Length: 205
Ligand code: GLN
Image (cartoon, rainbow, N blue to C red; front, side, top):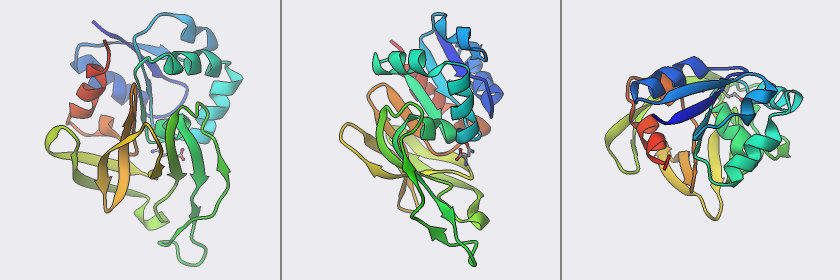
């Protein structure tokens, strides 16, 4: 079977392991720095809190080795916070002062922890009241709609050269692929539909 490493320092990693196991993958958890040195065929960066994940990745000394493998072409899927870690550019969405439903843009801009995915991602991009929501939308090369659970999600504000949008919800790009890198703003591991994980596993040679 294919060996998929799941970043397991924080966030929703167990649900990814469940989905990947159903597809016949062997999962290994990356918890400690040395874990990144073992062989694996692909990597999942789960949802959670990207600022915490980035800090832990740095403190545990995991970034350089994982970055090297991603740059070398190893398949990687980042979901929600994981998408933020991959993004070349991350904008801070600022919750609207006074109007909590308003989407306010204009926060700080910085590269994601890996910065390998040619997109600009806006963090916490939906107003507070839309913090969490569910949608169903078409997804490139998948038949019918895909269920999508969004939790304080980012969206993809700009797609740069080399990246292709795969899905939009309410006119906003929520999934993208750039070669070996797949980034989705939602949590595919929280719905029963395994097709996003299937797509990811199909990228493994
Ligand atoms: N809001 C989180 C962040 O910015 C992402 C939320 C999630 O992964 N569900 O990191």
